[in-house]
Image (cartoon, rainbow, N blue to C red; front, top):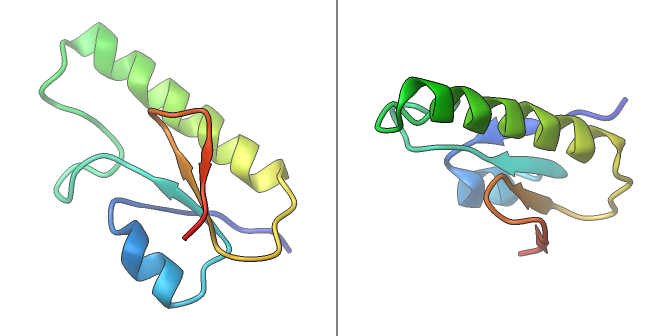
Length: 76
């Protein structure tokens, strides 16, 4: 069953063997960016969830990091 780990600590996630990792916000707010205005944070969160769904649907063979800010994959 495919799973996705959404975290700001993506280096730790790769070391423990998670296959699909979505790099989130900062440590205290991995699912948001409170420094943004409300509408912009909502858009960022929506993009974050979309990236999680993309990661879930992407076949991977090794730990792969999906970044919300970039469209490319980061493979450690």
